[in-house]
Image (cartoon, rainbow, N blue to C red):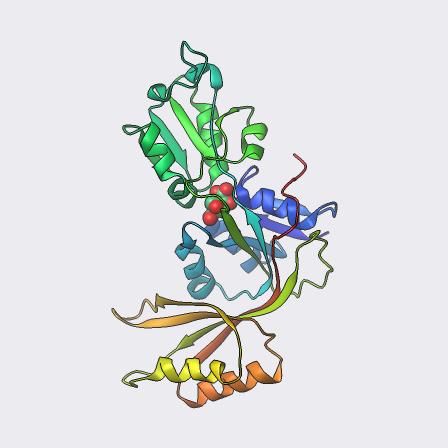
Length: 300
Ligand SMILES: O=C(O)C(=O)C[C@]1(C(=O)O)C=C[C@@H](O)C=C1
């Protein structure tokens, strides 16, 4: 049975894993902090780790990208997309007003994962302008803390699964500031994920993630790198610069290419880029699954 490291029970990551594996039995190892999710597989305690990589509203999760690049050397084996449906969670009887509706002025504090909180900031600030906001390691940790602090005016932004697991109520559902809020998750691990994934309706395409570091003092280097992809008609679906952490103003480029690493086109593009003096590191070549047409239901 596959051993999977992920954030705590009831997190968006947990919902996404239930969606990916469906009926297949897997051994879930939950950790409070994403650093421990990475380290579990790095240290061989689990076979794969589940890493939220990118979100519709917040963009890339920089902390997680940095861990993938700087702290561990574990290849990406599969990527899939899952909707991040956030809710305002608490004990209903604590916040209900005389009219029977939620009285938001009774809420003194909102807890959540920073990425989830940012997805709902307009909702929070328009209804609870003075509430204290506190960041924790996951949406489910936020829900757990609310459960442990009854009658103190605490609420959490989190999943329906989290509310259910901790016996709390959904005070307001779908509270993200924009609809269609999706998160891209990566499964990282040393061994290939040789398995047919049954995400109903989801399409898969080949993707390769690479890091390109440009040579110093080479005007137009990025232009030449992009040309190597362009004339081969290789489709880049993402390009982002991140600091190398070695010197202020030094960056590497994180690129997703819609092609398999062992294809003639991509391997020759990489050789050309290396010949320019660039350093190229592959983070993984893997199937990437879309969400279109799939059902959002997971069994709670
Ligand atoms: O806290 C959770 O529930 C997570 O799974 C983490 C995480 C993230 O790190 O981006 C995942 C997806 C959500 O959009 C917000 C938070």
